Every structure is written in structure tokens, then in C-alpha cells.
Length: 249
Picture 1 (cartoon, rainbow, N blue to C red):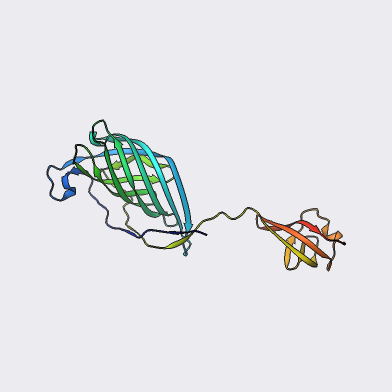
Picture 2: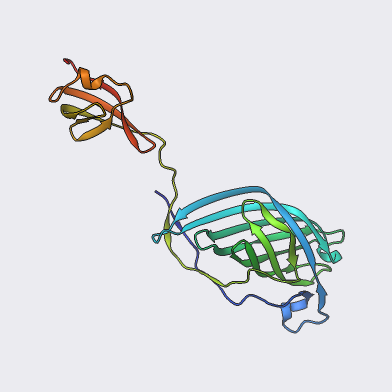
């Protein structure tokens, strides 16, 4: 059974300012900072999901997705939008991390693009996006907030700049968990030997006990100590006889 190793990432004290700022040098003394903001929505066009369970029985869902939509606001952040995102969510406690890249095809050149990292908390994400927007050599630093569902996408009132919501901090520590696998729908078993117990409802051979199907005449045709071979099928929690045979009844 495959194991999934979760990355070690510490996300602390998310940005609480209410505007996105495009400027030179990411706040390191660059000149001419300009406030900008945009709202956007993006729905999933492609996703793949893996699920695993930790040793303390928490369910972790990892989703890689592509989401497309439209951003509206300042001209440097307005246009068709594409987001590639990975979410790692503890669905038991409803916390996680969402990271990714985005591109906005604006009417001007170059297009806006960047990367983001956000904390997920009960369906809301809040974090920081950095990249390029507007004129060449102009940097973008933006608070990002959204209602987000990995299977559907980013809600229409998502924000680059503006208010934030769902701003918890989260730690993701290295922890192995087993890939979830669907149990087999049917499990078959068989045994050969003397019948040690038989009734109208069940039969036991060589330690294997199976229910008898409704209306079965097995209990009248076979008797304790008869040597037989039985085959049974486990379905919906019931191990039921499907075949019995012997050379002599």
C-alpha cells in the first residue's frame, strides 16, 4: 500500500492589510507604490485527488487542479484568469494549505502572473500572492482571500486585495499516511474437510463458517462429518455459501 509523505511547511501570521500593493522591490525601499485590487472567480476544469489516513485517523485530501475564470478590477489585474493550485486539506479538522500559480490575461502587456500560498480554514483561504503586473519590472504583492472548494474552485467574490477571511495559521508536519483504498466489493473464500457444524442457517467446514442462502436445501442434503468442499463470498458484511460439493452425500 503506497504511503504519502506530507511536506513540512510552517505558515504563520498571514498578512492582515486590506489592499494589494504593486511596487518595485517587494517593499524593500522601491519607489512609487500604487494600491490596486481585483475580484475574481474560477471554476475547476481539471482536478486529480489523492486521499490518505494518518495514524491518528485524520483524513488528508490532496488535490491538484486547474481553475479558470475572470478577474475584474484595476486594468493590470483584469482579464481571463487561470489558476493552477494544490491543496492539502485535513478534512477531519477542516484545515490545510493551498499553494499555486495564477495568470491574468490583461488587455495590456505584460500579463499579470504570480504565485500564492494560503491557509485553508473551513472552506475559506487567506494568504499572500506575489508576482508581476502592469508595466515591465513592476512587482505585485497582494493579499488573497476566497471561499474555496478544491473540487469546484474559487467563489466569484474572491479577492486580490480587499478583505481577508479564514485567516488561521496552520502547521503541516512530515507524517506518513496510507493511501486510502476502496475495500473489495466481494471477497471469496473456500475450505475442504469434514462438516463440523450445520444448521438451517449456516455451515462450518475446517473453521470456515458461511451463511446458507435463503431457501437452501444444504442442511437436508448434507450432515455433520460429511467431507465436502465449500466456496463462500463475503458481500455487505455477510459470508454466504455459493458452492458445495462432495463425492458422496
